[in-house]
Length: 137
Image 1: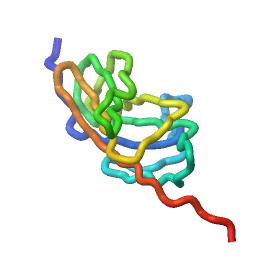
Image 2 (image 1 turned 90 degrees about the horizontal axis):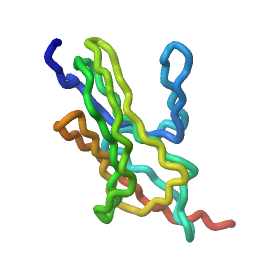
Image 3 (image 1 turned 180 degrees about the vertical axis):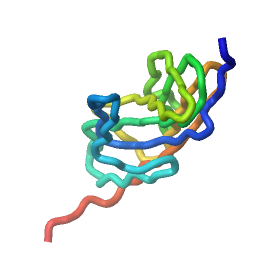
């Protein structure tokens, strides 16, 4: 059995939806940005996005890892506790780990996406900023 190797690069992608296509291709719909992104949302009485997907892309690495993806809200509360899953990393390939929250009731502030591979923790963040609601002229 070969030794495990953690990914050489990793990053967060935010989007509205994700689909796995034929040939194991991944389609991201409604791309919002990456780590550190500020998502601007028009302020209304109740702000809800139809969905948000947090995708962590892992490049390289080797071996089978226990993985979990969690979302922490601006108040520091665990909003989503992802289901544990096995992730297989292969040299020279990209592997995606994702969670979809639908509907996604949002609050203004900084969110943390926390991913674990075995006992190693990775953290990414994005922020939500409320913009004033447009008024009719």
